[in-house]
Length: 70
Image (cartoon, rainbow, N blue to C red):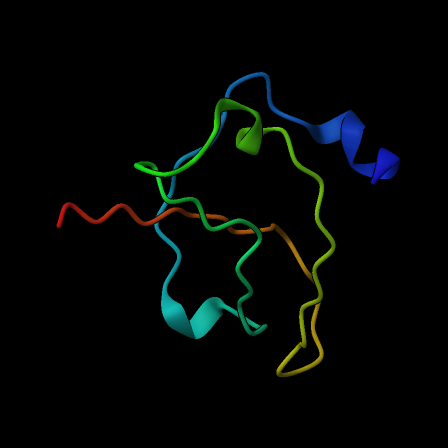
C-alpha cells in the first residue's frame, strides 16, 4: 500500500458511490456490540478478502459502518 501514500489526502474524503460502480463483494472487518464490548476491543488487526466481479482498475477502497439503535 506504500505506493498510494503519494496521493493520500490529509483529510478524509466523504462521497457517494453508485452501487453500479462497486466492483467487488463486501466483507465485514469488525463487528462490535457497543453494549457488551471491552475498551480493548477497538484495538484489532484482521485479514479480509474481496472477490472482484469484473476486471477493471480499482480507483478507491470504499468503507462504511452501520449503527442500529434498537
